[in-house]
Length: 423
Ligand code: PMP
Image 1 (cartoon, rainbow, N blue to C red):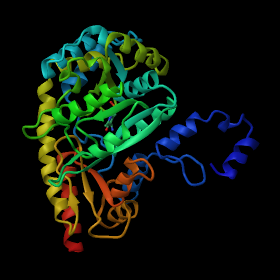
Image 2: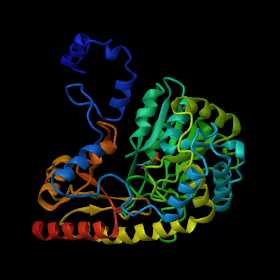
Image 3: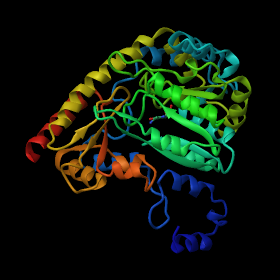
Image 4: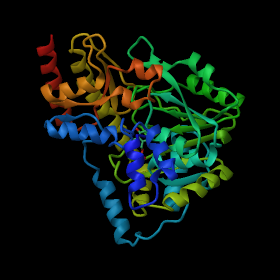
């Protein structure tokens, strides 16, 4: 924070903003603080604006380009007309709680009772509430890097310390945890480990073996595990999403978190769920209910219908995303000297330009936007500042293939045009 900002806030006609430092600590943790101490726009907002200025295809933010299916619009409309427009119960509407429990049993063989399910405002609220409820001040939270930015902000809110463990290239176009770094980082000071699978942005689908190793380490250090499974349906080929809680003898230290946004093209509805042993669920709910109490009442029965009766839609989405990745990834591979990740699931591919240019990911992303009309998210923006992984991603850009078929095809055409010109 600069002197200018501090004195600016002191001379303002309101109390000192920095007397309550939490907001600034959260923004700092999420990498939003500018050199002069002011708060910047998120990288997703910045890159969307950049794409807009140059009429570029926005492959930055992971917001699906395909329309929301009619069955969901109809179900939500029906619920509104039937009067489901007032506060939902604190734990969520029973119809969705039951649908989530049934989905876990059907898909993963995980037995879940109704008192273990909490409906949340997207997965983000579940993650933040779990972190605030369960992470003691001063303790550590391990995340695999790069990572979804809300983990860092929520850990700062809880007064915890974020520790990152890299996902490193496995030599076959994919990624795997840096186990040495993991063993070095975990210990009695670790309060929780966050595992996002399928992973944004590497596309890694954690195997049962990887998850078991993480779970064993959590047991040894008496840590929680928070899973982030928002891409659970979006796995490619014959790979399977493995729900960590379903493969361990005693899942009581596991908090499983997911949402409907990515799988059913309804990211704006923000309907998510958290599954935890009853007293753990109650603790998380005690925090969650003072964030928002409840939300999205008429969307809850609609999402219940999606889980109960329309899972095939999510599986079809996975196949169509895989097909789009097979259009975009080979196009990027045409660029001279780049390394392109082969996603196993999710929305994203990573393109490492280190072999082709000295420019950093920010400058390069801006130039590719300006000259060739496609925009991504610079890799370091998805890392903590100054970590070895953020260095390793210094020239990497994340691109999404969740846009519409037409946009994806046009983006691939533009990438190939860039490849021709740069070859
Ligand atoms: N986790 C990950 C890994 C994500 O990529 C996102 C969305 N970008 C979320 C959580 C957010 O999920 P929701 O919209 O359900 O809060």
